Image (cartoon, rainbow, N blue to C red):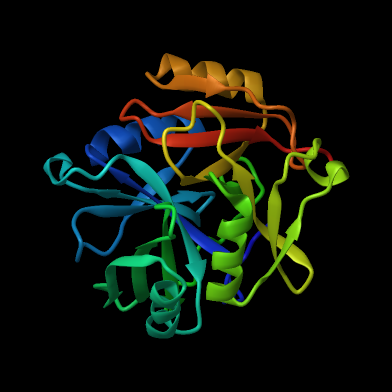
Length: 259
C-alpha cells in the first residue's frame, strides 16, 4: 500500500530510529528488512532515510550515547500545525523536549515530545516530505502501538491532543479482551494502546514492521545480533515477535494476515 499524500492530523506518518551507531544500525536493518538508504537532513546530526523499492519507509538518525538517550524507535504523528499541537501537548500534561523546529531541507516542521507517562513520540507538520510512501508491505511499517500503565489515561491524552476518537478494542479485533484501546480517525484505526506487561521497562510506542516469513525473519534478526523479547498472541495484523536490535532498540516484526 503506497501513501504519498498529506495524512490527517493524528495519523502516524513516519518512524525514526535514534541510534548510537548509525552505520551499524544501517547494516542491521538493511540485512533484516532489505532497506536501502539516502542521505537525509543533518540539522540534528547524521540522518538517513530508508527506502523499499525506492519508496520511503523510515529514518535512522544518530544521537550521542553520552547524552543519556536510549536507542529507540519514535513514531511521528501528522499535524496541521506543529506549534498549535505542541501547545496542546503541554496543556494536556505532556512535555515538549525538542521544537517546534524546521528541518534543514525544509521538508517539514517537527517536535519531539512525551506523554504524561513518559512515552516519547513526535509531531510532523509536512511541507515537502509527507512521510512514508509505503505501508503494510514487507519491509515497511504496519502498525504503531503504545505500551503504557494506563491505556485509558493515555487514550484520553492522545484523543485530546490530536482530536481523535478513542475506543475500547473488542475481543474480535485484538484476539483477547485486555483493556486495549484504539485511536481512530474518521472511523479508521490509526494506532493502538495496550497495558504494559511485567517485562516492559517503561512506557513506549512500539513499531511493527511487515515481513513475508516471520520465522525466517526472527532467525535472521537473531543471527545479526538482535535479541527476542517475546512472541505475543496473534493480533489483527497477524503473528508477531517483539525484538531488540543489537543496540537495544525495541521493535516488532509481524507476518501480515491474509485480507
